[in-house]
Amino acid sequence: MNARHLLILAAFGLGLAACDSSSDGAVDVALIGTPESVLTTSLRLSEPAQHVRAATQSGLVALNAQGETVPALAERWIVTDDGRSFIFRLREGTWPDGSELTAASVRDALVDAIDGLEGTSLAQDLAPVDEVRAMAGRVIELRLSTPEPYLLQLLAQPELALRQPGAETGPMTMQRDGEEITLNFKPPLERGLPEDEQWQETVREIRLHVLAADDAIALFDSGEAEAVIGGTLGDFPLVETGPLSSGTLRLDSTFGLFGIQVRAESGLLSNTGVREGLAMAIDRPALMARYNIGGWVATTRPVSPGLPGDPGLLRERWADQPIEERRAEAASRISAWRRQFDEGDLAQPATVTIALGEGPGWDLLFRDLAGQLANVGLRLERAEDARGADLLLIDRVARYPAPRWFLNQFHCSLNRGLCDENVDALVEAALAELDPTLRARAMAQAEAELTLANVYIPIGAPLRWSLVRGSVDAFLPNPYAFHPLPELAQIPR
Image (tube, rainbow, N blue to C red):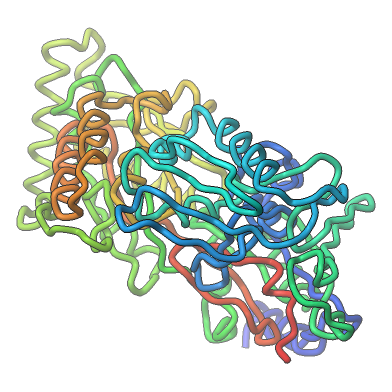
């Protein structure tokens, strides 16, 4: 037995000895990230920050451990038959300052939240919301210009929490003492629940640790944390994926964007044919096989295949064409463009830059991409600054399972890179379709146009992973990779 195996076994033994990190009544959760990005007051939230915001601030509805929409500040709702009016009845209660939770105050808070998202993709998603009305008593209505089947999913996003100055509106309060962060449940009445004298026997305090991935994993391995949340492909190689990880490593089967967005507006990548050549040259299954993740499927579509209501009109590109033929075509297009426009040394490969995160997984991905593109006469270099990069790696989990989310990520108003105004117009026209079948077909046309524009080079779905001990009962993998912290701290009766 070599020294590495002895160290692993020793760490495993320590983990068993210390696996009950909650013996003092608390549950320790490590979130991968930085305190500055996770504990922000901004409406631009990283994925780990979404977990903290959702624990401490509530919207009309929320997401549970399965990724389903459940009541929050609204106790129930109805949707009119035409799908253009959502009517919510608010729970009885008060805001943190003691003022009454009224329809008017909730309307104002919701309008503020929506207005604060201006310039983001979420604002594009919420575009069908025409009006927020305060009705009699504790009832508010959202009127839509066109039906939006996933409006509840949107309202459950942490960015749509209804915040009030000075205190939390969510189920938990947060305290910070230096680097120590704790989350504690409010009494049941403050959470809109019936009074329960034994309520403290069913919940635990959360000690929250916001750490870099390697430190979070070390905390888990030592038995000092019961869960690690927020893992991505960038830090996946740090995880022990052998037999010792059985039962603790959890993978979310997500949908979303994992690929390369083109940002360069001039030079080689300004040519649509050349951009398509790059997309042709990438061997996606080979890129993904390195990580040995079962069920992780490559795609050439900008919209994740298999979404609900997919009319099946679009197929994978180049499915029957060998990678060698695709790369020969890509090399020919790049060479032809350079002979016509490039004044540099044509004997040397053309250079393009890409921005991607820091971490061993991203390092591996960069090396593999660089090796593949070298086959078609391109030298791939890592950009020092994302703002000046020709290409940008996108790794983003979808907020709801509809083509519009994917297409909105490339809306020209967001200024994220190359875009196509015709695609934006097609999406807007699709929204005007009231018949779901016709809308799905119109969205498929918009996806086809985005595909042909080659402003985004898809690879697959985002990878998200967590480490979870068996003592945490409420953790459930879900398509949104969202794991509500309050549920992790509840003790089953």
